[in-house]
Length: 392
Image (cartoon, rainbow, N blue to C red; front, side, top):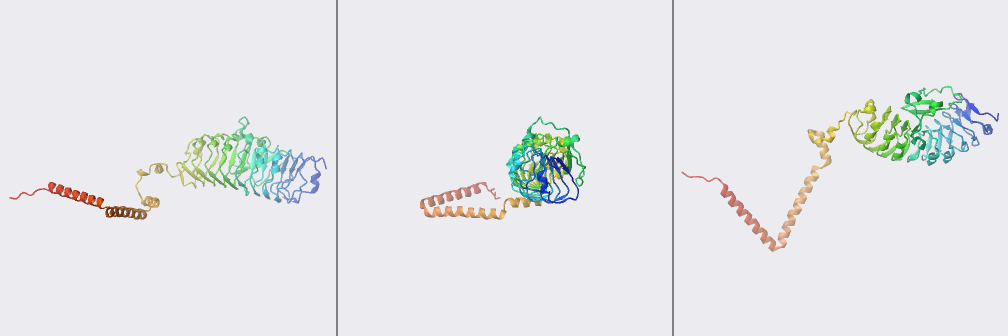
């Protein structure tokens, strides 16, 4: 069957490796074997005509070899929920038509390859739940910086389907992607309007590149459960289409940019468990729909919807002193150390004066003369101002 174009057999009980005979299918465009027990992909497989690969939820393990190295027409590469280890290969930068890259829930290591920046068509990246480390490349998904990229309203493209059951799949493209804390299946024309980045649950470090704030047409951004540091870029206020923003469980510091109140389509907003400080975004506009769970785990944050008032922080002198305040003051200055240092300093000054007077006779005579004059003046001052008694 050398002219075979589509192999669509998801959710069966197929086992074992993909047969070597698949390497002879030069015209294959769709390979959908998701939800089986496939154990291996032959290294010779990967026709240049291949457009869709759905092999998620199988038992493939080991490193991602050169199977799809020459599949220059590949649009979808879905290898999620497997046991793939090693790093993301550099040849992925040759897949210039790649639009949907799903590699979540594997054991991938290494860095996010800079070669992903060469993929101008990329609109969905899911590398979540791996062991990827290093910095986030600032050049990801440049196409989403185009303000002319048409995006329909949320109610049009969001279709929720239970994540435990695959729908009937034909040749129509379909991709599973998690947004707003729920996994959805996006298909057909609706899929072409969806965009997002999910790098959550990895070991990423460093700052969040401010260039991500230029992805004006992105709908979902999840960078949670990493080791990202420093501040939240104020450029995130440019993400006018974003509906789900999750930066929780990092080491971010500084304030939450007040410009984020301009994000009117947000349905999920999570900044929990960081080191953020200052005021929350309050109950303004879309942010009136978020509760304290969006900010919990940031001890230095204050303001609604948190129970901690910012007035208590900005005007501490107006509050009565209690035992906890005293404890904080003692932590700030150890009073025992203060008394000891003051006594030692006073003794040093006094001994210095005595030593100088002992060594220099001229200064000593002058000092005694001044002391005698002062004592005499003080005596007559007291005598002159004491009330006088009149005898009868």
